[in-house]
Length: 273
Image (cartoon, rainbow, N blue to C red; front, side, top):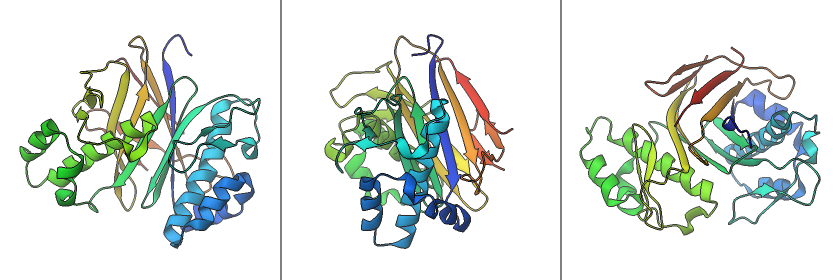
């Protein structure tokens, strides 16, 4: 672990015709279990998102490790109900990771020092009316009820992605009742865990918007942290040629509004929590 802080890398790429075409030529990077899951998707958009995100995962793991590992060497453990992890049967460096994909955006978060979780959801394609009685804690529902009707769907989505990222950090999936733990926003934080523990200072939570050319997404990150260490988050935005070269689009980050605009090769944001 870095004594100066916790290092987290976030890798993002658009799922487009070009990136799907590139990923399809790199399917040999995927493990047999990944290929099996990919083939089980019936809808083409679902298969495309899975393929791009998992090829991105292999590339991002190799780039994050910084020791020249072939992207095809990474293998994973865990069944369909458990958080995927790197296999410990190899001599490769152990990295924590999580991935998410929605619409035309795929993301992978990686850390060498702590477990992580990420969730991405498209804005303006979500309606909270079917969900808030199921997944919200009482405090969250009260906060949402106080919000303007003009922003309520977006506010709900911010809560949804923050809660999803936290659950993915735990690696327990939807076996956890989402109403048993509570998060707050501005700033994002967990105020009660699923076991009833108040204000756990070992949970890092962050939430912001990602603006693409043709869509906007809500993205939330979660990570374990120890001893109130600073969190150093590096965001890598890869363009559609992400498999042919280490090509980046620029990132404009407004920490006040929590915006990442995909329009600088790399953006570093250091936060003392």
